[in-house]
Amino acid sequence: MEKLIERIIYASRWLMFPVYIGLSLGFILLTLKFFQQIIFVIPKILMMSESGLVLVVLSLIDISLVGGLLVMVMFSGYENFISKMEIKTDKKKLGWMGTMDVNSIKNKVASSIVAISSVHSLRLFMDAEKISNDQIMWCVLIHLTFVISAFGMACIDKMSKRGYS
Image (cartoon, rainbow, N blue to C red; front, side, top):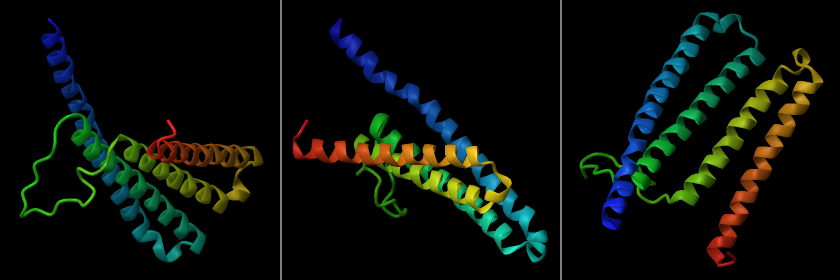
């Protein structure tokens, strides 16, 4: 009976597969949004102010950071929880594939969230005259929460690697 339960639990990891497929679809949608913004900006580029262009570029950077986060979570999650990816040697394999454990994924996700939050904050500050002080305050507080959380997680990870756990 115990062996059956263990096999069922082990096989249940495949329930994550649809989640990673969903993330892949999300990545496709994000890519479409990226190109939609580029296509939207091209006809207006000569009439845009410098700050307007910077806001658009920050938006593209934001989409890029979220996309990178999605790729990292999809690949690492699949490899850590479902199955190792068999990439042919003639194909270019990503250098970090197969090397990220759950803690390193967690720290990279936290760092990515801080970077994404930084871009959002910068975009907000670029339009500060149109935004209320309360919104700016909340943005800063939320960003600081992300920074402190990421720092705390990194410290805990470092302590656990040194054997303080």
